[in-house]
Length: 398
Image 1: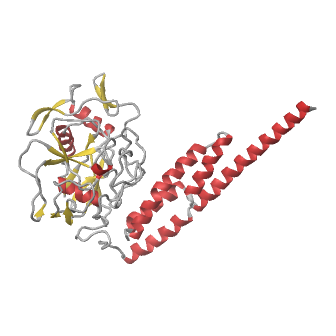
Image 2 (image 1 turned 120 degrees about the horizontal axis):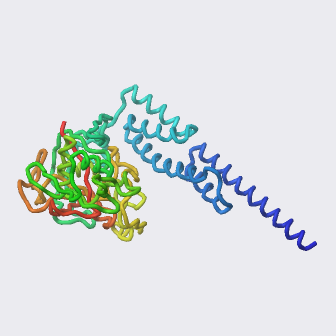
Image 3 (image 1 turned 120 degrees about the vertical axis):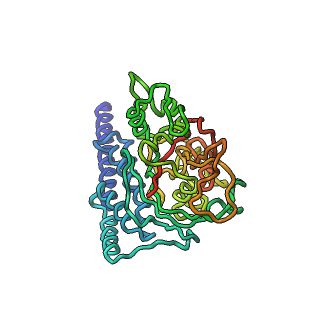
């Protein structure tokens, strides 16, 4: 009798657990259909304590994707960049066709696009003539790399004396830039391997770089590229990770192959800021949900974050207002300029010093402090040097 009672109680608990699990899934689905992705993720995650459910991991992944896309779409809409806002809301609808907010916002975008409404400035974030949204969806592709058109303008380069954790070599000065293109993301291992194989670069990584003779372009790395059986390949599972251990010469050689070039330091900072004047294009702080850096060392005594201790695939974090990914953190990015002091007067399309010993690096990295991810922060290294924290993106003139 006692044994039967125990079995009965066990069956009742099993049925209860199953019913609760089903309730969590139902609640999650209801929240998802309404576009409340935090709620949906919370319920899907709660279901895990009752065991696995078919497609649950995929549902959580969809929630995470929507959670990343939604604030970017809303920000672009608030900036009256309706063309790009519409594209972001459409990304939401591609994941969740029932999202009522995305549907409504796309209708609003269409009305504003039709009426010609747009905004090229935002007094709250910028006192320069640089646009706070690119206002153009124009792009081009070079050897499989997508570049976005960045509209030129005048901005204040460097950091104000009041900016916490700044360095003295960030002297503010006025810079005017012409329109240019910049790659949407950092160059990946897969893209760099295509270049190496197309040029027949041997396993030594050495190649003749125009104007510089034979130089080592790249060193193998377990996050980067490998040379096996006479061919370059991305390290396992790292095809879409940023290429690392690439020298400045290696970055230049890739740009030459594509018909592009490395960005100037001024172009890089202008594109990173995307119309902002704050320490980061995210505002006065940068969290580890916004960029990949060492979260044990946050900016200006803000709360600590996570430390992933490695690179992440390109585009893992929300882009800035101009659609550029990972301008803060993940890997430093080579610029074309020799490192040197800034001009103290206004300049147009500055190219940096005519000579030097070190090339400019920008953006911070996965292993660095948040202060090194600031828009104005300047790093430098020898053109022959490399590390697992350095990569690059490409630019092109009109």
